[in-house]
Length: 111
Length: 113
Image (tube, rainbow over all chains, first blue to last red):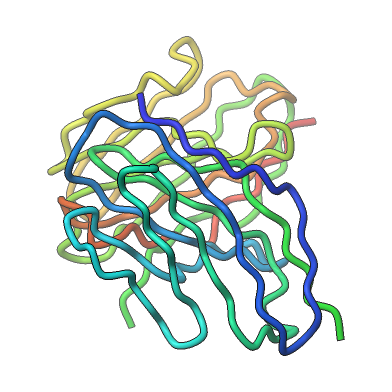
């Protein structure tokens, strides 16, 4: 079974600065998808960004971008110009047939 | 506005009672996931369906949990009998095969007393 590891339980960043959240995964599959989800205190799970493993180009969505290193099985999320509303739990997820999540990183953006 | 709908949003029940949680996936989605979220275990995959067929329910305690999709617009997760350790937030998510993404419902917060 695939495993997803987020090694940073908590992180903080000053408003307007940049922060990077780490994620590694373990799989023997070649074709799969990776995601970052955000869970604010409302507990709603919100899709932030997705990456298809067969695409070399890193995905970007406005202030959010990823660094996908397939050989290293690494998938980090960079948040630029951090905003107070970015404060949330962030989950990395791996999808092949089923979808597995990491333990999450609690991000706090400080004013 | 397509969304995954879960009912009820909150449920408080006594130990031993049956609990049924419902999920209406996004129209046209053929994959449905059930997750349980707790502080200790994070997001655990309980079961998932593709085209209404159960593909994997190895994450569920078989003696008390059951998941079904009676039709394409409804997925259910049932606990019978419920126990205090089942207290958690249960999420349903739906998506399309080959991973465009899974979209989550708002969850059912279950408290078993």
